[in-house]
Image (tube, rainbow, N blue to C red; front, side, top):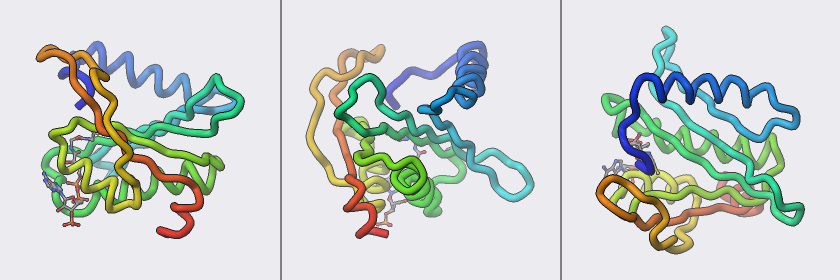
Length: 148
Ligand SMILES: CC(C)(COP(=O)(O)OP(=O)(O)OC[C@H]1O[C@@H](n2cnc3c(N)ncnc32)[C@H](O)[C@@H]1OP(=O)(O)O)[C@@H](O)C(=O)NCCC(=O)NCCS
């Protein structure tokens, strides 16, 4: 992940921010929860529109599935739904995600959803273990239309 394990206080703050940002107009931040029938939370995802540059129309995605749900195809489904939300509902042209160079599951899930591996951002994130590179994957709206 791109962050260290969080405290309960930190997570409560994050959820409060998510709820607050959901009311922004225009809305630029989407953090859907994925539920199993029976209201059981199994995953958390995020699509954040990159704001602040009039010539850009892009958004970054993030996603995490509860560990006991891995390997059943839910990750790929979740990324597909995020791309659909971004391109089809919000009209975003470019959607990208950044992963750890060691995260082969994330690489596979994004590739399976049609995202292309773009390259490496060197020294992207500072973790307790030191500076970490990120591998960037992306998809453009016309590519999503074809993939779909
Ligand atoms: C990344 C993550 C969402 C993948 O979800 P998942 O539901 O387990 O993945 P899926 O079952 O949809 O698998 C999709 C593909 O990835 C492959 N895959 C899944 N886990 C893998 C692993 N650990 N190593 C290699 N390939 C893996 C599957 O075999 C499948 O490929 P296939 O269809 O060719 O067989 C999940 O591992 C996770 O939540 N990890 C922790 C959070 C995280 O890393 N988020 C991404 C941050 S960038």
